[in-house]
Image 1 (tube, one colour):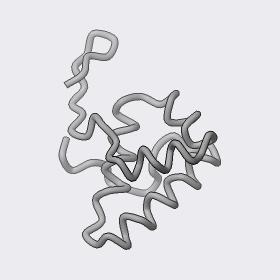
Image 2 (cartoon, rainbow, N blue to C red):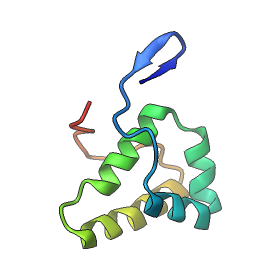
Image 3 (cartoon, rainbow, N blue to C red):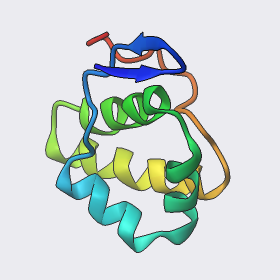
Image 4 (tube, rainbow, N blue to C red):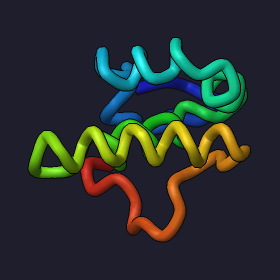
Length: 85
């Protein structure tokens, strides 16, 4: 767990998987948003993009995540949140 401003944040997905890292490396706009969001927001993106049960769903979510971050979105919208917290 990470400590942020004296508080312990439970972040079950602290490191982006390889396919998410690859997407961020290919998109400077998405990477710029990624670099400015909180660890909890990163956790939400990672969980949302990787929680699909099928590989195709994961690929679609990673692409949508790239598009949404490129447009300035800081968290995935209309999602209940990471169930692992």
